[in-house]
Image (cartoon, rainbow, N blue to C red):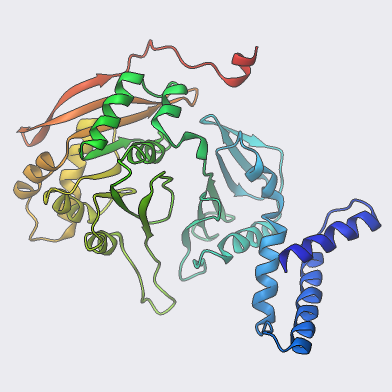
Length: 387
């Protein structure tokens, strides 16, 4: 059905000359093709499409793409897109942001978001003014409704970049030395538990995916995330994401629930996309059973990451004591990989540390295994290599 609509569009463009195909054009052709399909189906006694509106919406979403943002999504040099308002569209290339000359209407912004959410099973409205969702290509969408965001909808799209899915690629791009990549690869294969820390946009999720992709082919990996972001090259993998509550306030699936369900799935490694709340307790308890794990956390250093991981489980309830949590954290983790981003946008591993199992003044003690030098040369950009 979708291909027939596309063929009709190409045919009309060839006859009428090149012109922009509007969403209404696609909707009109979709209705015609679906009705034609039903006529043939009735004549042959085969199955018809009963829900015309739903079928039309699905075809339009697939054929029309994402309107004025589609060219930005197709541009491989762009890693992130955000819209602060109709005339405030920004992109990031190589970690550096810039405003581009693109103006949208409020209707175009709403229409594009609705198309993006169509196949995700997620929604945004007055009762649910925030939404996180994964697009079909793996990119992450985050939207804040106008009224919560001043003036207009706030839209952020963090694109899926499959070219950075391995430690070898990160070494090639100068994110870490070969010796440290080999160290991390060996640690993963030996069953070490690793925490990846860093600030926002420091490359934590990319590093986590590259690390877990080094697992042995025989290992079964179970990942849990609020929204699908991880890209992991593995043979035996189950990926799960949370779910927002329904309009009635029911049906929510939290990360804590997903961690507990993952433990029933015979994992050889448990991966939590990002630890930011009480699910930290369930992760620490799981790691203390001898199950290898990996996760990311926002922090300013490897030491701060351990301090934060020791504090987050306290959010789980009043019966959780720091005197229990702190030793549990120090026993459950083998390495902390801290990521950072330079002013020019280059992302790199700033530090690799190992917990010693001791605490000094209530702070987990670490042993530094690697620290990046600020004098380390940056890799040449593609244009410089070509020159």
